[in-house]
Length: 102
Image (tube, rainbow, N blue to C red; front, side, top):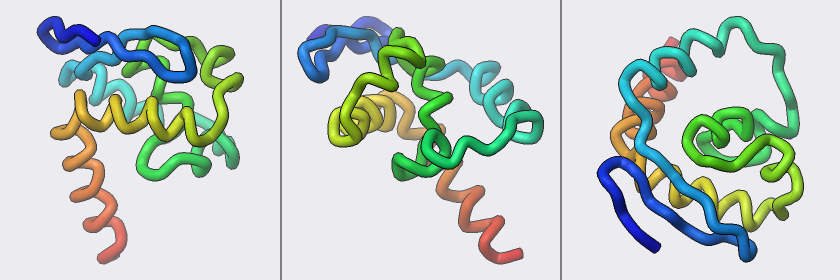
């Protein structure tokens, strides 16, 4: 495992890949895209706090590579993504609480 500014190389299920910290522009783009995307029940709700379609933005893994992972392996990928993007995920928590109040 190695850390480069805003990037971390990790290994899950024998596959080495990079997890990156999102830029402000990438976060804005992801949030804008929420309104334009169709719901994918499995991909959007399988994992706690993150959609599968967002993982390729945070990692060097492709959608097809992610589809081959077991759910427990995906949780490990998400754990690394949350570590690298803790500010983004904290913002998501605040937004969820705000939406729940409405």
